[in-house]
Length: 117
Image 1 (cartoon, rainbow, N blue to C red):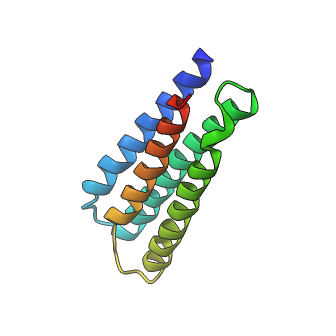
Image 2 (image 1 turned 60 degrees about the vertical axis):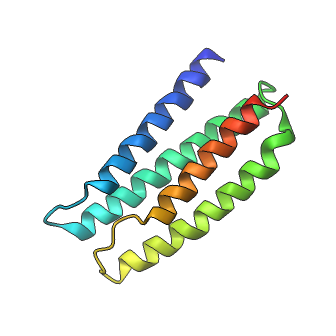
Image 3 (image 1 turned 45 degrees about the horizontal axis):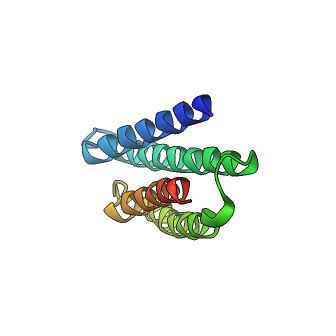
């Protein structure tokens, strides 16, 4: 359990780093930065989901929160997909606040589900 919790915390730290990159993404090659930022946010969010589902699978967290977590994940994927589509038109648009908010919503829902009895 301790190893899974440490992995989960590492993923949250990665999400925080991705958010920092998104905020400070004023680089010369904005399109590459946009894709890297979106990729980082996706990787951190999906990693948090994977750790949560692994904890559920091993019976360390109850299954009651799974539907809410998966709804939050689906919402994130929709918003993230829209941001990737926007970036593909070379708009130089960084990861939008909506993507970061949706990602934070997934992580918050996971944290809430982990603490519910």
